[in-house]
Image 1: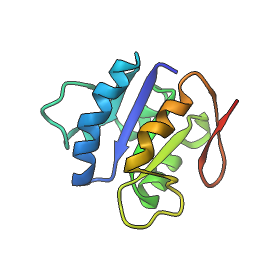
Image 2: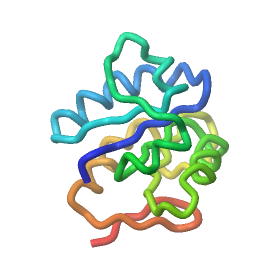
Image 3: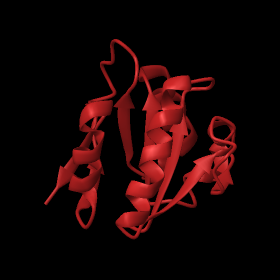
Amino acid sequence: MTRVGIVAKPGGVKAEAVIHRLLPWLADRGLSAVIEKETASLVPDLSVASASKQELASQVDLIIVLGGDGTLLSMARAVGDLGVPLLGVNLGGLGFLTPSTKGCCWRSASSGKGSAWGSTAHSTTWLS
């Protein structure tokens, strides 16, 4: 895994702070980021590659989805059959499909580096 996509709920102000922490965290681990274009508007002060929602899945090895179930489902539709795993990070109050919370997303993302990824209908899983 070398490139990570980042998508946030449209207008998701909580995601701004997470993105500001996430980008250097990824860079420290030798990973580059591509931010979905609408998400990039949340962090105009950052210089990072961007792509449309439809193009993102073909450019990355993993997509981190910051938001809730609706954001995760929207990205799952955009990914389609490309097989790119999604890591859902719940930034709202209730999430049935977004298994990670903001507090544990760093641990979840670390677990995937160098591992084989697989996904289920309900959550992203790590395969050893």
